[in-house]
Image 1 (cartoon, rainbow over the protein chains, first blue to last red):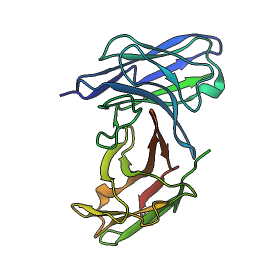
Image 2 (cartoon, rainbow over the protein chains, first blue to last red):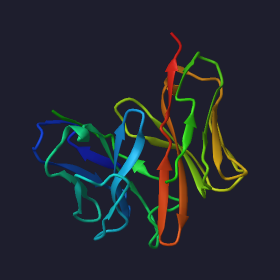
Image 3 (tube, rainbow over the protein chains, first blue to last red):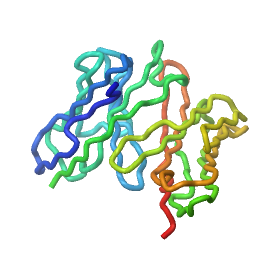
Length: 119
Length: 113
């Protein structure tokens, strides 16, 4: 079982360039999430998808867009990268029921991250 | 918004020592989670706590859900070198149709030089 797989692992962009971070999970989870991790800031939620066909903003959505392509895949797009978006990006998934964003009995499973540098 | 205060921010351990860290908040949470992150990897769930006062162990790790529902503690007994990494607490507060998961800023565990 691969769990949550993110690609690429590393990426360097110039200011203004665009790119898409890919994420796929093989655990048949309903919900998927994108976080960014910055030194001293912990993990902050960018966007999430509670179920296939839905997406919602998290704590820091500005400058990002997402697509829940199908149940397995959830991509994060930077349309015009900025140095402030230099960070490590983590995708996560969980199995939730009903309409709850997070289920108490299904904590998050994380991918290994994408380290993005914007110059 | 809701915030978690995780302490200490960092600590050095010597093999065999016991380690304690905690998270506190001014808000009540329904669930507390503890994750560990190794370098170059994503966080991995260590322990999940679902009831106030609950004490749960996972090997040498023990975590408690504070009785006030505003704090949680993680203890590591007899630390070993592979315990180094960043430990995150996370509090879950759900109500209505949405839940809100808040992460602490992490406690970085390093080996004493």
